[in-house]
Image 1: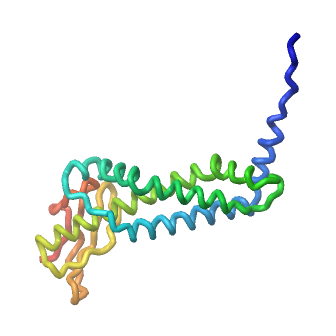
Image 2 (image 1 turned 30 degrees about the horizontal axis):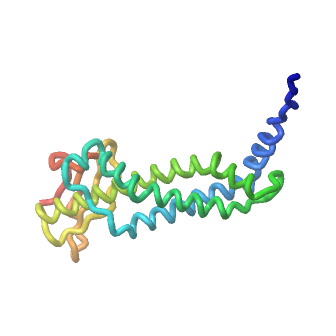
Image 3 (image 1 turned 180 degrees about the vertical axis):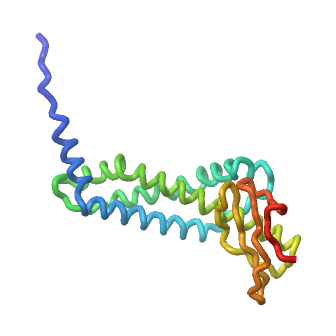
Length: 194
């Protein structure tokens, strides 16, 4: 004798989840989580004393791919896991239509967090790349121009980076240093004052 399975109603839970995700307070909360995570990520990266500017060509190849990957494995991924765990425990958005915190935590973990994590990983790559470019520009500028050189915040300029250079104490801008995404100084493309 074969037992018949009762019909499963999978659309009701999916509709409840969609309703919860569509609530303005849920969307506002998700934006807030993303902003808070990005702010804390940048603070973590700024305060990470283990960061070192990669100087060898292998670490700088393909836009610092190996360096980024190693940092993501050793430092970023553990930080992201801890942040996700903490954020999932704090899911406190309106209980309607989902009645349990566990349901909201699962939705956060499976539907909201993947997008937040992707945005954080991209932001970390950008911050780390700018950190490396700035460090290389500072090293190059001190060797080639002056020990009293100040290096500004690197900005992307197409397929390369532009780094403003200033002389300490004078406030005089000495020019912009152009650096490839692999960290090579492009002296021909740079605009430096004599």
